[in-house]
Length: 164
Ligand SMILES: [Zn+2]
Ligand SMILES: [Zn+2]
Image (spheres, rainbow, N blue to C red):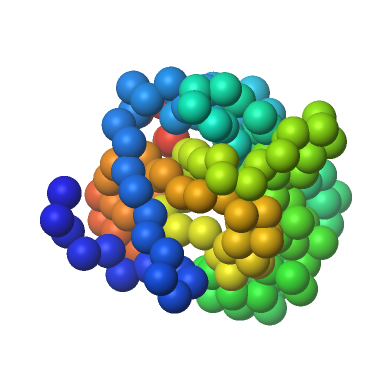
């Protein structure tokens, strides 16, 4: 895996590592996402874990888009930008933040733990800020995420993430 991936955003000095779809944390994230994601277009789920022990888990999305037009769509804002302009798209609804908050709510310290994100190929600046503040050690994505979950890539599986 020597492919260089150009992330839309990654903090200075950080890297992302990859695991296969059989990785237990990735399996858990996908199944949790299948059950709990409110964002049906780009469902994502995250697991915060330490040495195989799950500390927190979260799925993305909110009910806002069920009853309101997406502000970003209405304004023609391009993908990856302006999340904070729409209540339904706000990064507080992203699974990375939800998983960390879930761990905290259960009284776990997440410092030095790892975060597994299923369903996306990069983390936004807002999520990275939370990840860095929480002192998460390593972020893992599903191998091939930059193709599978990349709307710009011709071979993506967006729209059929749970059926392929
Ligand atoms: Zn929106
Ligand atoms: Zn995010």
